[in-house]
Image (tube, rainbow, N blue to C red; front, side, top):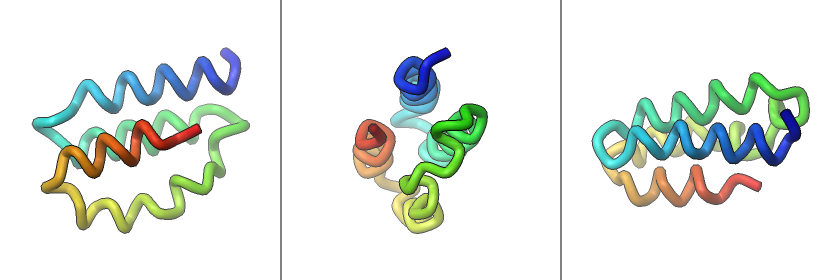
Length: 69
């Protein structure tokens, strides 16, 4: 799977958890990205702990997921 295909797959899986489960959406995104060698060290993963503070804001989590490129 190409990098872009994997990224879109990861986003789709993560977004399926919203709006009901923001923590699971973030966890899914982080886990799926680490499964591809070109995405495993994506800079967005480094700020993931910050977003656990936004876990009660599904729209902030949605923006974080959709913002990956």
